[in-house]
Length: 581
Image (cartoon, rainbow, N blue to C red):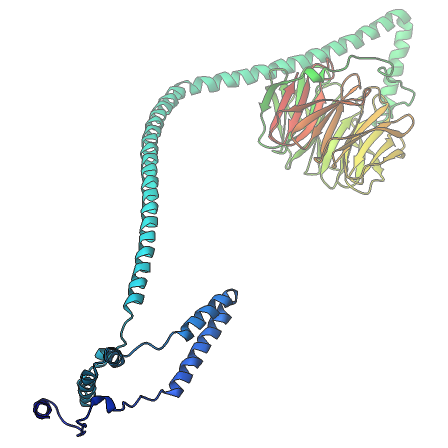
């Protein structure tokens, strides 16, 4: 007890005594330690918190319900983490250090009641193994991320090296291109200076050449006119010599009386004429061997129509740039250019004698041009809407036109007035043509029909039904017994005029068939298609021959050379006309 008292006196000097407790001298084992009561409310709150956490995890991640329940069970099975003082108490109890436990409790509560402990010092005892395991996992994850980062860095370095090489290559290529460009600019400037020296000479030579070609064309026309006059005078002279002097005087007087009493209008052509080509057989054009020979660009817009001169190798073109032009073949040199229409020129045709050209336009007018004088001789304004096409009678006294006003008109070229109006179509009349060596007029209309009219009476002789869309054109063959009509669906129908029936239908595809033309023999048919090609067919064998491709836009018109049948001319919306031979 003496040592105990001395120890108590020493402790009384160092510590503040809050409560004096007497200890028995018998044994320390008889002391009953009072257990701390567990806080039931705190445990219930913890259980509710854990239940809420489990419920939230189950709601947010329904696919991992089983994993969430396992983790929640693990959390519920784990005890509450030990507090610092509980750790020391358990350690002392485990090793039987009861006196040290009593001293620890005494000093612990004294320091806690005096407020000398800080909150940071009363933390939960960390689980060293859990901390070590967590750090080991973090190290593993960080090592994996480091390996991935190294892989990404290596790939990035390779990509960077590749891009750097490509950059150097493109930089070198750019420098070479710049050098070549500068060299080309220098050469181009030198060539421009060189060309400027010859430009006045070239302009003068070009002008002289155009003048020479015009003079050559005019001389040919004059020669043809003089030859026809000479032939007529020779016939008159032979008649005079045969009949004698008296008869010639009477005939001269009769001719003078007839001239004085002759009407100012041309007489209607007779109906008893025969077609001289009705029983003729010509060799078919060899379109299978035809290739693009030349392409001529002489207009600023789409070329809508072409026409051949009846006597000399000259072709006429009508264009959307408000002009028409005459070209010599096969060189394709410009002979004449006509300007006068106020809108696009839609159609063109030559007079049978070749001295007059007729043009139709979107300005609702029809103009007649004197080729020799290079001037417009007459302007016909009978139509009140755009005029699509025109055609001359083979005798040369009448011309027919068709218009968007749903009519076709026949004009007397002697009196220059309208002698007949053909009414019956219910939509625009898109094309008109004469049946060879007859008085019948053929029209193709937007009302899906093709009609045949009598020039003298103005009545509709026959109407051909069968097209499902607007008819763009209808043409006769040279014998006059077959009609080919084409429509906007790409369908071409061939009709036998003698029995008034369709005997062949050709489907050219989904693009419209803009025009069609027979060769001299009537056995080969060429079709101008909207797909920038020319499709040729053998009518007798009913077979496809060849597809001529060379234009860059829709082909608007096509025509065989009427005299030799050796080549083909096509006109397109790409502002060019091409020769195929």
